[in-house]
Length: 384
Image 1 (spheres, rainbow, N blue to C red):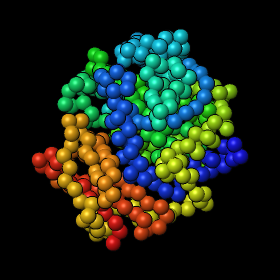
Image 2 (image 1 turned 180 degrees about the vertical axis):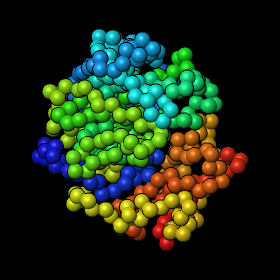
Image 3 (image 1 turned 60 degrees about the vertical axis):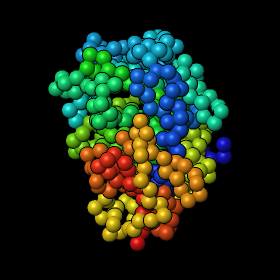
């Protein structure tokens, strides 16, 4: 490895492109293909995986006694999803039981575990098993005591949550569970939702601060957290009114591996750019396309951009909420309407994502409108 971790982290601090929306759709499509991988299936969402290093189970007792007796233990949660192998690892480890309350929700980090082949259900990506994984067990309940909806109910998912490890020095908008092979299984017991979340093993970053975020939304919420580009540290946005718990993970610094960490970041970069490395940019540099995209809103998009009529399609979601988009070359991608769009905004145009390189003429903005009949009108916009 010729490039050391500091060089890689410098690039991570100042990425020069937003993740391509076609890549985002590919990630979600792969998630759909792998829905039945684990046979846990009380509620599962999977996104493709990368690789990493050795074994670890770690926890601390710095949480509250309240968490210890009120919630299921991490091993019991793993066994809820028929993962006795992972349950045994959690049982032999130490629990964390740290509770934070934000946005009307009480969120407890019950425990973490990581290692090679410590689960009975390992993802396969491009024909290769990704065996080295990081796992966390989280409990979520409403502060007012109202039971969380059962995973089988129509109400489940209307208030989504996103769980991901985040690493100091790595922009969390880019480096999170979505781009690091993340997924989760969920169940509700006695009005409390339990999630077993997983992704690529992150212990190789242990010489720096590693966090676990639990926030409202389907993906990482950049409004809920603050990222210091100078120090690389991540903190809660105290002015955010929603759920934005942030736990500092007690991972042994001796587990750090700078070469493996650099390789992981390279792989994530390559995955977000269709297999090609990103080009280096000077810190603070923002492309013309990115500047344009950042100022777009559903309200001003028709003023700033115009639709490409050849991309306009009326799509019908399948039973799981997925729609399939076909481009001019006949290639198919897609997205999940429940994840990507706000159902309360029926009849209004919403921005799904964008793809671009540096120049403004490369920018393509993916939009959609949920129609009254449940279909989705999809069209790509470009700058005027």
